Length: 418
Ligand code: SF4
Image 1 (spheres, rainbow, N blue to C red):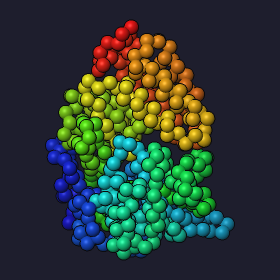
Image 2 (cartoon, rainbow, N blue to C red; image 1 turned 135 degrees about the vertical axis):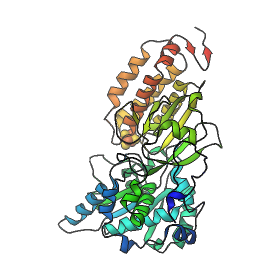
Image 3 (tube, rainbow, N blue to C red; image 1 turned 60 degrees about the horizontal axis):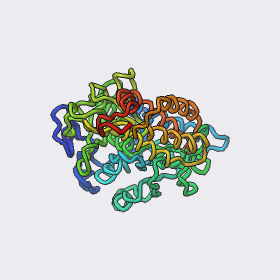
Image 4 (spheres, protein in one colour; image 1 turned 90 degrees about the vertical axis):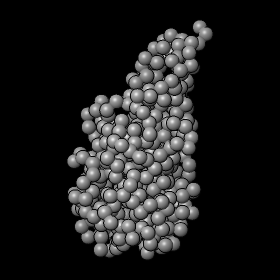
């Protein structure tokens, strides 16, 4: 079967040129249905030439940072080989999903676990890994264990539970958690491709990235590039939310899709939305204009999908109050090992909450700027910088609301008493 011909799951999209590759085997596919749909993948046969195939495909990571997958794999493999005493690396499938608005990875693990395992085993074989891990939230582990029991290579893979914290999926926190049981990021100057788990070169790849690897290994780079654009080839899963509980949807969309098309495919009318948060809690607020969802491109035309999170704010909801709530949460998620993060983020959350609550002090936006300068670039991980980016986008997109709040008015709440 050609997986491109499948139906898009959980949506009836008129606009986004739906594709269904990753979920083409249908819901909760056991190994037999998976093999019927995609065919069996032998990691030994797939490994030679796999890294070249990944380079030709243009696949980038689907966990947030969008690094070229082949480049990470080659760096890890070369680092292992050039040691005085060569070692064999470690490969980790990262299914941690601490971002509260993301649910596409757990959906993928529930419905297409064998694609993830195929990709993991093929990459592990291509870099001659000694150890292979699947790192996933506790709720996904029973399903993953069933899949491992069925999968021909499942016994090679060790499973480790990720805690439900925001930074549990950061690559160095993943390695730290597997090594010590503590999902706290390591010093960002340390390159995991050189020194990762137990000192071995370590490759951490998002589970969706690995599922794409499994399909590229079967169908080739040109097949992968048949969806998406030359700059953003292939497809990606997106978690779309914002219309109330029970209405969240995972869509598979082509690279370079228009944000408005994706929203319409999820059943939303962009004209009824005041803003959209793209990329999750470390992402950006944008107006639902014709932005392209892609990892690279001119600011203002392109918005980075990050880990594929899209959250819509309905007309009439206050973006400043929504952002203040998110930043308060993020301030509580600091791993408390870097001062600027530990003290700066709660201070920023405090100022933002004062603006959101309608405190009429014109110095507050300046206080946020000053705190942002103190915090940016000062953490061992991206947490402070990602939080500052979110706040900056809120101040830009909701600039009219900031002025109104400082004047004692809110378009959502009404007029505060002076
Ligand atoms: S920047 Fe914050 S979250 Fe990141 S390691 Fe430091 S204290 Fe922890």
